[in-house]
Image 1 (tube, rainbow, N blue to C red):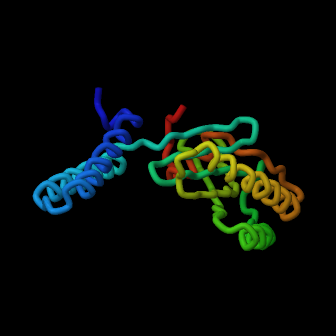
Image 2: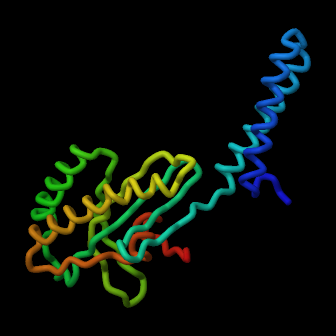
Length: 199
């Protein structure tokens, strides 16, 4: 069993080493050699945990099909994303003029509830699939021990964000249908246009 891959054991080991150091300081504060050894062991263990998190961690991707949200859980941060697509965009149409209305609506929203990002995207597949044009809202926060609670807090903000985004897009582009983006569309935007195979 690898301690790095067992979340409960790695935190238990960290607690034991820290407790040992504190007891050593309390019982024999004059034993500098023992304190230095235990302190060095604690620092090495924390460094190993840190390097393990950043070198071999694949983010956990969760899909809320009912709401259309993608949650990306990383070691220190959680992100929640949702997007809307403009359907049937004719070739040669200028989307930039009407986009200012959407930007203004989202700017006002993000001033009231900071921590959000708006991303305009165009994805053009290599095959025969259609080009997709849309806007994505992303909210991120530090990951706390209770990740589910943090995601629920972000979900409440995101539900208001996506309602404002969809309403603003419908007002700005009244002749174009606004559709909910699916999981794969959101993942492509988040990976810089690279196709991913996350289940």
